Image 1 (cartoon, rainbow, N blue to C red):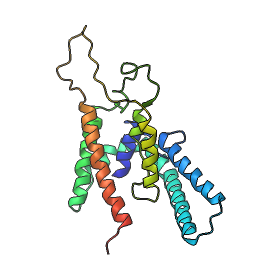
Image 2: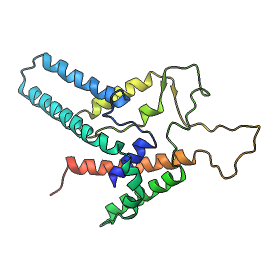
Image 3: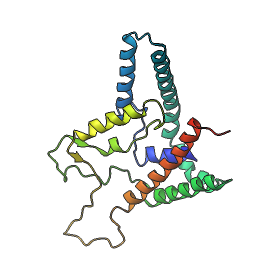
Image 4: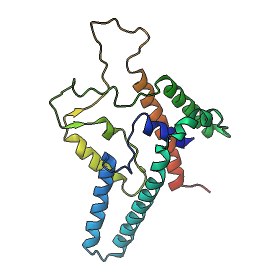
Length: 219
């Protein structure tokens, strides 16, 4: 189930994956990795610091290994072909799985209604502050990343916030109307974006619950 949702968000909606070279989050993780290597070169002999450093190294290894495994899977177009079959044949066993099933159905409906619509289609930087080069781009603030509960969370969020606060403009969806043609009464401005952002928030919350259970398992 999660695989087809990730495939749709990556292939159609065009949300970057953190393991892709050259993406915003790939750069952030590369920077964190460089910081760790620089700290290692300092030769800290404190046992507690050594243990923490090893934990960071292990987390990086897990993140890179998982990213290398996940990325080719969600890039595979066969998952889009199977999306409807996977979603409609999913059998939930409890309330939590029902939430996944309902979420997936709404993603499928969005895909059917907007089969080629990406997150950047509603962005028009040439119309909104076109001369401003220092801007927060949509492919930076909507992005796959590894975890918000690992040992890099605080540093990662601080890096992103510092990067964003230096830029005066953020790219956001914009409705464009042409006054030489009659408007389409069936078209609802921001329908795709409103539904998509709501679904992404619900997906994030469900993944966050899973992440929490992984780090704070109950017996």
